[in-house]
Structure formats: structure tokens, C-alpha cells
Image (cartoon, rainbow, N blue to C red; front, side, top):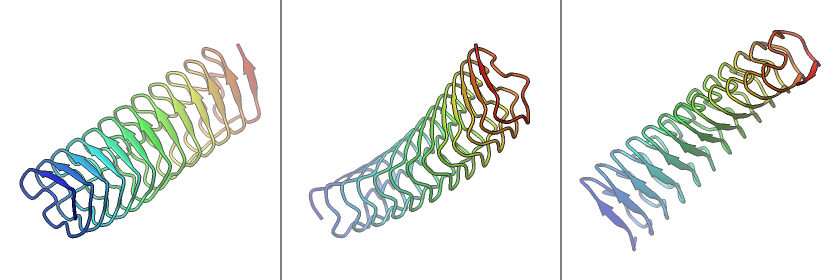
Length: 212
């Protein structure tokens, strides 16, 4: 396939009919056969990609397990490193979305953001360690360092601010806006806390509202 660009030992070495790929780095896109319009820069980037198209991988081991997942962007060492078939994820930062396998439509920006997520979908995490323990939780928004840091399977939470909803594990449908808002919440649900340290003592309580 043409036109492709390959720089580095074993880069794009198995390519057959795929076109418009750019591969720079040792073994980058080594197993690609028909996947088109991919960009891989770095050691072992997109190593196992075969048919997936329209991916961008920058950094050693970025998207290195990907086989058929298309439309992903991984920037940072090991970002989206375990991704196989998931679509349309964005991972920017060291180890961002590192363990994601089949979950799609996630956005993780910041070192270690969503680094434990495996199959959780449609999450947005911005900030160091944001949503760092999430595994299968869906539809969460975490903006700020360590926001929703301990959430594992919780769904539909919104945390904006450093350490907001920090200790929440499985509590769902909470809104914490402000530094340390709902920081001690564990399993409580449908709480709304707006402001610095709002509802900091709530652990399991639900349906509380605090503003200021």
C-alpha cells in the first residue's frame, strides 16, 4: 500500500495494502497489514495493530496492544497500552488509560488519569490521577487533580475541583464542584455539593444539597 512512511527497524514491516500510515520507531506498527491512516511515533507504538485505522500513538508502548480499535489518540508512554478493540478514546499523559481494553469514548488527560479503567465507557478525566481507580464505571466527569480518585465502579458522577469526590468508591449520580467537595463520600448517592469543602463529612448519606 502507498503512500506510507516507515522509519526504524521493523517499522510497518508486515504491511500489505494499507495506505497513508506514518510509522517512526523500532517495531512501530510492525504487524499492521490493512489498517490505514495511522500515525505511530515511538518504540513499539501500535505494535500489534493489524486492521485498525485512523489512530494516533505518540510515546513508547502507546496503543501497543491495539488490533482493531479505530479512531483512538494516545499521547504519552504506555497511554492506551492495553487497548485492543475500543474506539474513539483520547489518552494524553503517562499511563493515561493504560489498562483500557474494550471501553470506548473515554477522554483522559493527565498522568495516571483513568489508568485502571478496563471497560468503563464515556468517562472524562482531566488532571493528575483523576478517576485513577475506575475500572468499569461509566459516564463520569472528573476535572482536577485526584478528583474521583477512588471511584471503582461508580457511574454518572461529576467532580470538578482538586480532590472533589476523592473517596467515593461506588456512590453514583453525585455532583461535587469545588476543592474537596464531597471529599469523604464513599457510597452516598445523588448528593450535590458546591463550594470549598462542601459536604466534607458526608460518607454514606444520599440526596443531600449543600451550596457554599
